[in-house]
Image 1 (tube, rainbow, N blue to C red):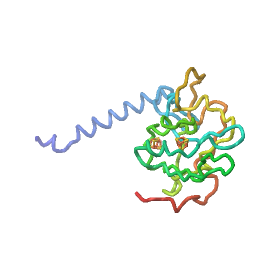
Image 2 (image 1 turned 120 degrees about the vertical axis):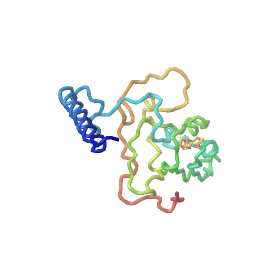
Image 3 (image 1 turned 45 degrees about the horizontal axis):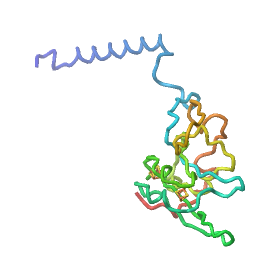
Image 4 (image 1 turned 90 degrees about the vertical axis):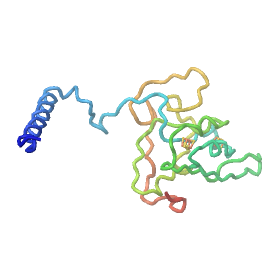
Length: 197
Ligand code: SF4
Ligand code: SF4
């Protein structure tokens, strides 16, 4: 290299001019910037976006899940842990424990596809920030939604025909209550469930 090339000054000055050029251009075209002011502004995600899971309920308040283990069997990440209980009157099974380790989940949607009871859906809720690994394990109290919870605008779900959906920005969809995710209190509810990295 020549002496001037070894100084790298032309390259440094050229780089600074390029940065200045982009800065000036963006200053006069703020609306055209690709960045958004999250969380005030949220991007519109696909109607089939696979976000945080929910477990739906019947009208009498019982969970639709019958603890059949189909979802945990289909799960490639082995992140669903279910313990089944049995209703002594009806002999129907139900989950006494249903945990999903969201740090292991790869959000593939296989659990939703496998469910014969239409019990587990994946919402468009992508806001799952946590501060400990234990909090990544969500249980029944985080997953079960009330009866008549509007599932029409949900993300990934079994497709049984025409479902009226609307493009919405983030969250869990139009008109749906935003659920506090993943826990309302400070105490990790299932710290003993953490199975390590
Ligand atoms: S989305 Fe996929 S990885 Fe996540 S719990 Fe369901 S089956 Fe398992
Ligand atoms: S496949 Fe559906 S009904 Fe069966 S355990 Fe999973 S969520 Fe419950």
